Image 1 (cartoon, rainbow, N blue to C red):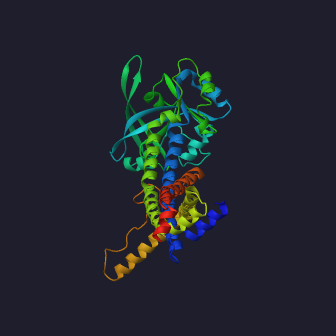
Image 2: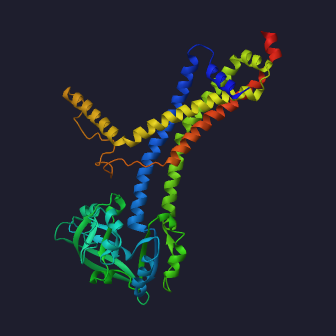
Image 3: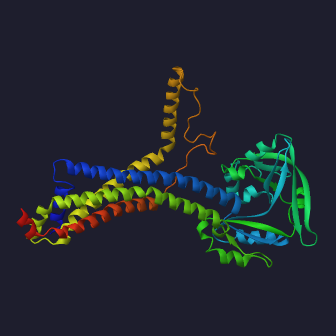
Amino acid sequence: MTLGATFFAARRWGFSARKGMSSRRVLLASFGIAAGVTALIVVLGVMGGLQDGYIESILQISSFHGRVVVPADKADQAAALIRSLPGVSSAVICSEIHVVAIGPSGQTMTILLRGLEPDSHAKDPSLVIALGLPEKRQFPLPGKLVIGKEAATMLGLGPNSSLKLFGVRQTESDGAIPVEISVPFGQTFNSGYYEFDASMGFITLGTQESETVFPQATRILGIKFLDRYSDFRLQGSIESALPPGSSEYSSWRVYNRSFFGALRTEKTIMMLLISLIFLVVGINIFHAMRRTIAAKKGDIAILKSCGARDIDIQRIFILDGFSIGLMGSLLGIGAGLGISLNINFLANRFAAGLRLVAQLLSSLGIGGGVGEYGLFSPINYYLDSIPVSISAGEIGFIALMAILSTTASALLASKRVSEARPSEVFRNE
C-alpha cells in the first residue's frame, strides 16, 4: 500500500465503522491524552518554579557557585586573583559559625552567623539582590547585625535593640572556646526563602565582634561565575590561584548534592505518577483498536486479497494511534501553557468565587462567615505568588511520552491483523 492509501484508510476507518462513533472515540482518547499532558505541564511548571527559587536562593546566598577555605592572611590576595579570572563574576571573603541568639523578647534560637568583608554590596551585588535589599545600599552594616525578617520577629528585635550571641570558636592552641558578644540590630532582609529568613544573620568582618566569634586562622572564599554551569571548567584556574594551605575547591553541585538530588528525585517521581494517565489511556486505545480490528476482518481480508501485507494494514492503525497522541499533545500543551502562565490570575478568580459563595451562604445564615480562600495564601504559605518555570525540553519530553504511549498501544493492537485470513473470512461470509 502507498502512503496515500494508508492515510486514506486511517482517516476513513478510525475506531469504528458505525456512523459518528469514530470521531467521537478519537476525540475522547485525544482529550484523555490532553488531560495528562496538561496536568504534567502545570504540575511540573509550578514545581519547577518553586525549585528554581530555592536553588537560586541557595546559590546566591548560602553556597555560592564555588567555595574554598584559605588562610586568613592570604585571603585578600587569593580573592583578587580569582576575581581577575575570565568567567568569574565575584569572589567575597566570609566566615561562618552557628550561634545561639537571645533577643529582647527572651526567645532563643540558633542562627547561622556569617561575617562578610566590608563593601560586599559592591563586590557581590547579586547577594544583596537575593536578600531583597536595595542594590547600592551599604552591606553589611558596619558594627550592626543584618538578620532575616522571620528571625527578627521571633527574637523581638526592633529599632535601637540588640541581641546576644553565644557560640564556640575552635582554635589550634586552646581548642574549643565559648564566646559571647552583643550586637546592635541594624536591619532585616527578606529573601523569600524561609530557612534563610528565619535562621541567618550577617555582620562585618574586621570588627571587634567578628574577631571574637569567628575563627582567625581561615576564611571562606565565596565564588560566583557568569555561568554557574562553568564550575567544573574553571576549577583548574581557581585551584592554581589558591595559596598553599587552602582546602579543596567545592562546587555548588558537590556542596548541595544531597538537597538537589532530593529535588530531582521528587520531580521524577511526580512525573511518573502523573504519567500513569498515559498508561490508562493507552490501555483503552489498545482494547478499542482490537475491537475495531475484529469488527473489520472483512475489510482487512479484502485488502489482503488485493495484495496488501500485514505490515501495510498495521500502519493504518499505528497511524491512528499516532494521530491521537499528536492531537492530544498539541491540545495539552496549549492548555497546560495557558493555565501555567496565568495560574495566579486563575487562582485569584477561583478564590474570589469561593469568597462569593461563602458570602451568599453567610447571608443565609449558613457557615461561619467569610475567611481566607486563597489557593496559596501568604497566611498559610511563605510566598506571595505561584512561581512557574518549565523548559522547552520538559514540554517536548511530555509530548513525546504521550505520542509514544498511544503509538505503542496501536502497534500492539495491530498485531491482531494477522488473524484475518482471506480464505477463512470469505468462507464464513
